Amino acid sequence: MSVQIGQQAPDFELRDQTGQPVRLSDYRGKKAVVIVFYPMSFTGVCEAEMCGIRDSVEAFRNDEVETLAISVDAPPTHQRWAHEQGFDFPLLSDFWPHGEIAQTYGVFDDRLGVARRGTFIIDRDGKVVYTDDNAVPDARDQQAWKAALRDIGAIE
Image 1 (cartoon, helix red, strand yellow):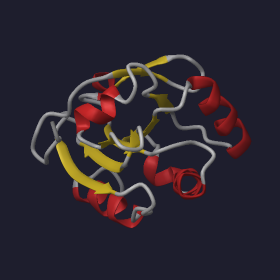
Image 2 (tube, helix red, strand yellow):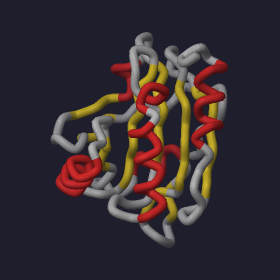
Image 3 (tube, one colour):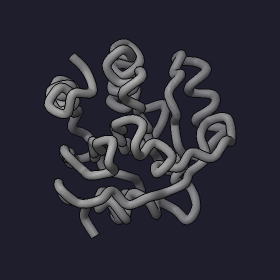
């Protein structure tokens, strides 16, 4: 299944870098959510993208928006990476069943066993308003994410 614009975003619950459960539906009616699937922690393009989120935190994590970054890495890997890089947004583990949420969203690369660089922006009502799906080596355009967030009134 591939998630499309206009659909209700499939709910999920995953553990963050501190081991706490994070459920997508907990944001419904409260905040827009940027879901950022990435292949693996401690890799060049992934680190640049996550640092981009960290460095633009006012756009990606505020009273109107939450960003959830998801990879197949285990929570202890996320915890170490978050600590080293100063990531204070949730890094969620799609570790087991391996890549289940990435598969649900249609961005799992079976050949590599990791998520592609899929991005989904979910409005406050839980509907998908933006998607992109980049290959593992291709960095994404975070300015496009900001434009989509502006379009739904989540940032100025």
